Image (tube, rainbow, N blue to C red):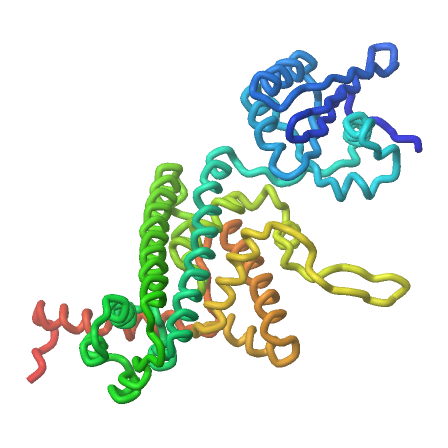
Length: 409
């Protein structure tokens, strides 16, 4: 296959855990092509040697294909010497026919890059890449917390305690106090005295829900360990939240954080975790469609001979997709235009597909908000009337205070 070169000097890197295969294609003044192949290890000294070798060549472009997360350390080593490498998707490389073998991977990457046939993946800035460790571990802790809460509910049900039937949140302040009293071995009347008066269930129903057929010492031991673990995870998540917010504030991301929170369904921590994944500069994606494709929430595009085949979503950034689905679940329960959109979709597509479609719509809205630096404006809300309704009592109080209107009798 004849490939027309665009760049005169390129380097291709095939990155694995313990080995980095490098190939440099250098066009000579007489038009001939010099091929230089090197092998580097996976340790720090090897990555430093790779960076120095690449800097000595001064390439027009460096592309790398990697397994898993092994690209991050070589990328950082090249970045430290002023070379910004292009991390390419292996799926895009395989779509181009040619000599795709393990031996010639690096040379084939360099050949495709020299012809301008590879598209670089989005790589966030260094400060956001570092903060992703905090945000993603925080998401993992959230999953662990949900798992432990479900396990606590299951052990209570196994003992015959149906507290989850009479309270909306088994881990609310009142319900948690009752669970701790059960673990401590207090009697049912003592546990019932801890129930908040704000609970909608009657005292008789709560009393019956606390009756246990078989609450053994093993149940109490497991419940105590699970409750301790839940509180440890919650304390750990609080520390992660504080560190993430402090780091974003120090990096100057206060304005995008406030902007994202104007969209229904997004709170402070959700905005912070989304921001470290996609950043505040939307120009790197080019369009809302490309951002949705990168995340993996847009409909699949598979059509042949006029027949549309599967419309399944493609693989993308699972961390962002999980956040967007959580935002969509919250927005579907709020009073805004997004709720109406979800209700109209759920009739035809069902709950899960409607959540993904709503997440897609919210992501496109987020792209527009960050691009134009404008807050979210809901078309179903009369902001002028809402402002008057909220501020009228305060305005009237000031008029009375300064004597413009008489005080009410």
